[in-house]
Amino acid sequence: MTKPNFDALNVGDELPSFTTEPVSRLTLALYATGSGDHHPLHLDQDYVRANGIPDVFAHGMLGMAYLGRLLTQWVPQAAIRSFGVRFTAITQIGERMVCTGKVVEKLEQGGEKCVRLELTCANEQGEAKHKGDAVVALA
Amino acid sequence: MLIDKKHIGMKVPPHSVNLTAWQLKWFAKATGETNPIYFDEAAAHKAGLPGVLAPPTFFFCMDMDKEHPFDYLETMGCDLMKMLHGEQSFTYHKPVYSGDVLDFDGEITDIYDKRNGALQFVVKEVKVRRQGELVCDVRSVMVIRA
Image (cartoon, rainbow over all chains, first blue to last red; front, top):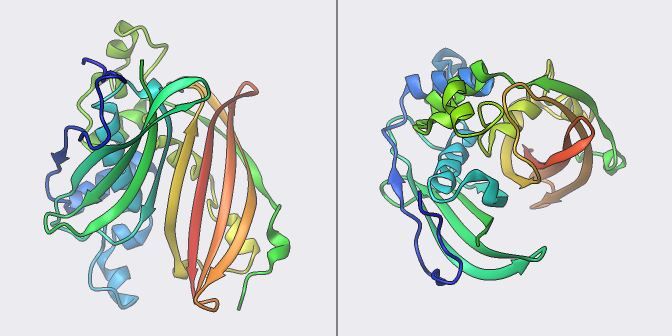
């Protein structure tokens, strides 16, 4: 992996994006195992229906993990200084997650050259599920 | 009912986590990770790492890895059925690997509401340390619907 170069990057430059497979019940079962979050809202259709919700839906942190992959496919993880998201909508079964990011600021932080990134995890219709940002240190 | 702001400053019961390659392997599978440093111990060693690398959001999973992860909300009298995850952020200081033992030490740093109490926000900030060294700050905002 060629690490992005601070001087060569401009505000507006985009990270290589990707689109996930459709989120399935298996995806959520695997995420429950991997994350340890076995909340029935994500796994048990009988439970959610009994609570007036039509179907199980994705863990918010699954989408954030996808955005984490967007970052670590772009830079080595040790370059990430901070990473945050707001959960703005629920991801339903069958939706693909489109993960995108772009440079919104070049800055110096703690004596390091950094870029601030704006990150979005959306469905294919463009409805944002998670909006995030990250600061990444670059040489 | 509004959450009593006296809970700002409340300490969350601390806990420790033994980070295992087994758990990270399942997390990598669940999130579609293809870089073997995130799931294969031999590949991680070959890359010069002491163990399998925990990915950026895994600190949240470890923070939740306790018998009652939302014990602090229960202490405040919140109905967990009305809880949503509002925001999540991390500030990173050191990478962590399988084989590490990590200590989670949290505190409630803010409680506020919007729309005349229809939405209440509880902010928890957790220091994650490895043998006393700060490795990550984890900030979680949980939303309680009226």
